[in-house]
Image 1 (cartoon, rainbow, N blue to C red):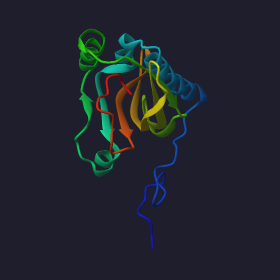
Image 2 (cartoon, one colour):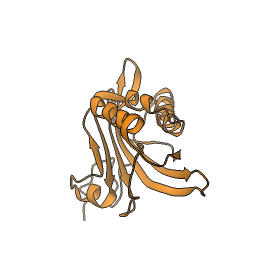
Image 3 (spheres, one colour):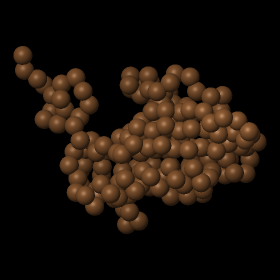
Image 4 (cartoon, rainbow, N blue to C red):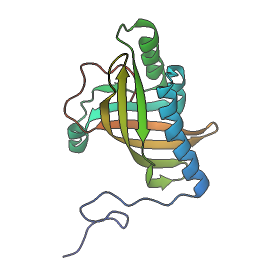
Amino acid sequence: MSSASAPNEPRGGPPLAAAVDAATFIALLDLYQAYGAALDAREYDRWPEFFVEDCIYRLQPRENFDRGLPLATMSFESKGMLRDRVYGITQTLAHDPYYQRHVVGAPIVRRRDGDTIESEANYAVFRTRQNELSEVFNVGRYVDIVRRTPEGLRFASRICVFDSEMIPTSIIYPI
């Protein structure tokens, strides 16, 4: 029985990590950590700056992602749409504020092609409301396409694939 898998894809599992130099890996790790830190610090105006202009940002349930179905809880297709979301979060939405804390695993580089990196990392987002215990808010993995730009590494696509089929009644802040 012969395997039809590509050299970098073991049968029955995800592709193995692709090799990148140490400086690129550190820059990628820094991108992931700075992204979570900015959101945790409620620096929402910085959020779009982690992306290229023609980006994709999606929050999508695992079931739909795994089946290749397009339905997503949130879907934005440009940096301008991200800026609109920031305006909504900071200027128009009325909600009980809460804090988020992102815990992000080290990224795994799945593929590299020139200045483009395909990577993934597990995440857990905790939510804390005033006078309440912290709770697990959203857990899953980031499936990303990252591009090297003159400003450094930026997300061309970030799909937040959450594991649970159930989500809170509202997701206000980016994951």
